[in-house]
Image (cartoon, rainbow, N blue to C red; front, side, top):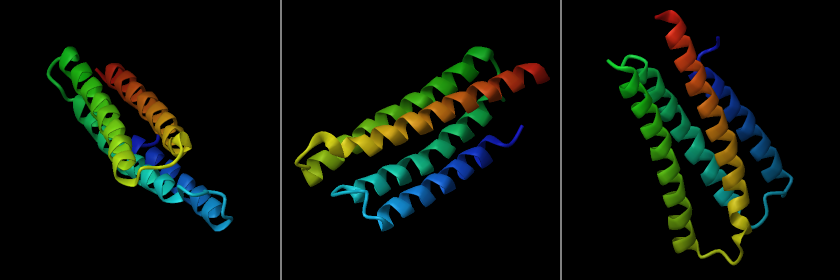
Length: 128
């Protein structure tokens, strides 16, 4: 199995390239800067969540490991919601459509991190 951090890095490189192409084509619209900020937020926070997941495999108990993984996921959720609220308060966008790229990145990165965390947990159980 490829390293989860490598998987997240490859996804981020691919998404960054797609976002760059959309930017050059002028398809990001008025809130293109928020698309980039959302991308950077998830591209940087997801490896931290994965790293915590890798560390959780070394927890003393099964419950401690699960708590670390759930806590890391919840931390990403709360910080991402705070990210949107702070942006909305500072920039005061005219439309709620600005959150579409954010939610696309949220679903993509959260789904991938959940899948990778479950894979790591499954691999950790097989090794014991």
